[in-house]
Amino acid sequence: MEVVSLTAFYRQPERFYRWLRPLVQKMAAAEPNPAHHALAELEKLGRLQALLTQNIDGLHQKAGSKNVVELHGSLERLLCLNCRNTFPSKNFYPHFIANNVIPRCPACAAVLKPEIVFYEETLKPSTWDAAVKEAARADVMIIAGTSLEVWPVNSLPLYALENGAHLIINTLSRTHLDNQADILLNYEISDALPSIVRAILEG
Ligand SMILES: [Zn+2]
Image (cartoon, rainbow, N blue to C red; front, side, top):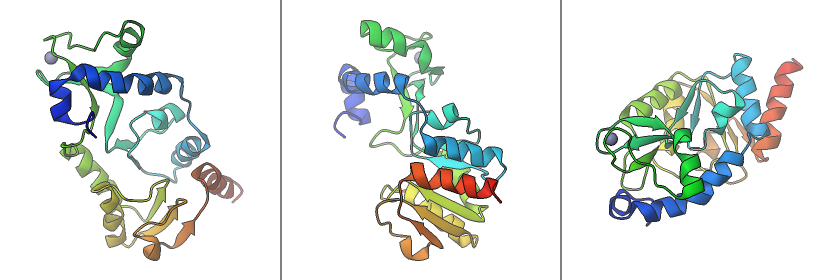
């Protein structure tokens, strides 16, 4: 929290990028898991309209998901806090990893910040609105791999419930909405989500 705050970033961007370095290295090598693939498959089958995620690693898109709302932003883009231009981070990270050169804006030379939501920051209004819109038109919402502890994302199921949606909760922990769920799946998401796809395919 101390590093991933706007105040700290403005004061010591080097410190933030030192913290980010192992994450970026891990991300470059990361591959989607069976849960990512299952969600992409559900969308391809026409059973999933939107994927609302707190993940910032871009793995849903790597698995083939198209309509992804990234509530906490993405490490895949860098934002200039001075001129507000955004850039794909893949143009900067290799240089950063190899030579420890902090990404700077090609237009104005200010330090670039990954387009993720920091502490002290609110979610991007257009992103939040898109998530609410998708939640409010859902007839089924699958809540997967979250204990629904982070506000305001944990309030999204309420918009679905208001629309009369069914809830399927797939997590190993308890959530504040367990008693509202139609189905509770206390299994690993990498097991449960592919099973849902298999059940659909087998009719
Ligand atoms: Zn700039």
